[in-house]
Length: 261
Image (tube, helix red, strand yellow):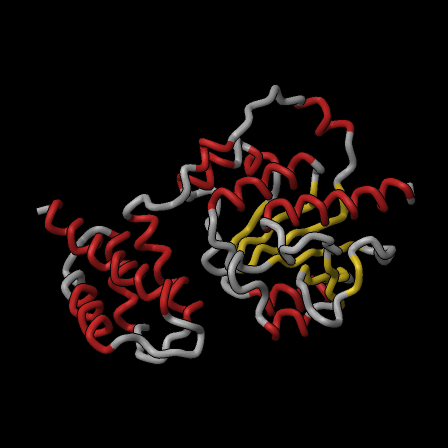
């Protein structure tokens, strides 16, 4: 019985991945594939497994004008159920921890907001960097996998146990809330109005916002931020892995904050 159920989910995964590869943001789904996906989703409605019911809930959101980003977001529960995510542990480096450092260092007045980040490896890596620099907090928005996800938990190497974090459904209310608390909220994005990362930061608390690996930040999220900063690159490629980018942003803020005493 379970094998039959898994074959259904595997077929659903195959269809969704195929659509992810060929559908552009403004296109509509292939009608035959669309109907087949709906049939598979509908057949899952009587399942008792909570994770399968999460997948089934896509049935109520699926429509022929879905954007590629919406499709990708709904693919995540299927990926996680089938354990199709990255083998994060293959990239981990184990080092001896220094618990005494935490007691001696001040909390860096910096918050990270991860908005619909897809990879549990990226999230785990960002947690490790954030804890290493003793950041104030990390917010996980939308589908960003949190440390209750087994793969994220594995890749944080326990960093999430020493760093405050919270999941929230949407970025915009959070940005407004932080601004009301006198945070300077800065989008990390390659836009035409972005200023270089290395410019002096305001003498106040700061929050960086990082977006989805493929789509970046939504325009309304960027508009809600106080400013946008970009990491100036000199190579042919115009982007970095989000975990690497976050590490550089964190270090630049730390360097300036330390220099100011």
